[in-house]
Length: 330
Image 1 (cartoon, rainbow, N blue to C red):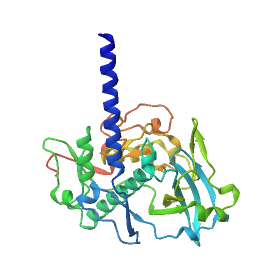
Image 2 (image 1 turned 90 degrees about the horizontal axis):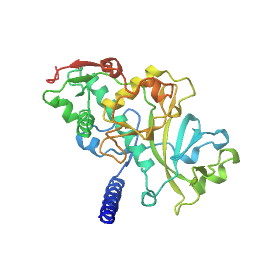
Image 3 (image 1 turned 90 degrees about the vertical axis):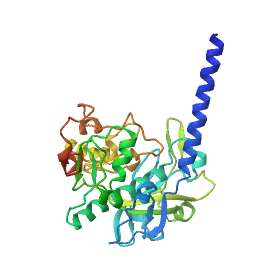
Image 4 (image 1 turned 135 degrees about the horizontal axis):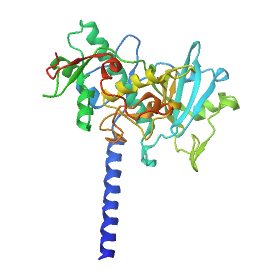
């Protein structure tokens, strides 16, 4: 009897692993980049389908113009390496290059995909709020005030779309808030490709992307079959102290918009109270989204300064820059 129970338990675990592998492979197949150049003054499309399948537009800056003699490494980690760079006379920017360029060879989240999708979603969310303001504030995004489930998270994210804004889509009997503004997030200038074979001869030794090793896991740009790796260009956030209240406001906005934190929120992912590692958040229905981690975190906890795990009730209005409404959206 005991042997049969053990065999049954092992079969269940194997089935769950197989199901998780199939789910991961399906999500990895989702497109996450758009060949359209990110042009100044042209906001991203905010249609319902755009939110369901977010794709980041391409950076117009040419990596061949990077002045590597003036560059510096800002940090390295399990996802990739980040430099402070200038593209010719433009900059500084933060250039993040991801170690993985082939999702079939990894067993965790595909960092380039997650970060591109997150950056695209944050751009669309901002564009949605700004468009509502330009329209006179008559059709702001209306979201659930206290989302709890995966369905709630996806509902709130889709409420930033043009179709849901126009319909003032609210679930019956649920308290909702109008989103009038949003916290500061690092501006993204789009995705690009980093050709390590072309770049390496131009790079001084002190800024070369040497392999990164943590917990016996080696991450490198030199082991892949292809020399081209995904990269994202961001506004360069200068070092500065993190204010727990400001961090809490940004984190709560992300929660209301449907994002959960990664495995554990880390203070090193924030600079000057601005989120600088966009792999630290996970959008709904994407690989790594967790109902257990879908909750509002206290700023002190995110910054590892102690304090309660969840923020107190009644803080939502000040955190999201929104006004409380009833379920009719009034």
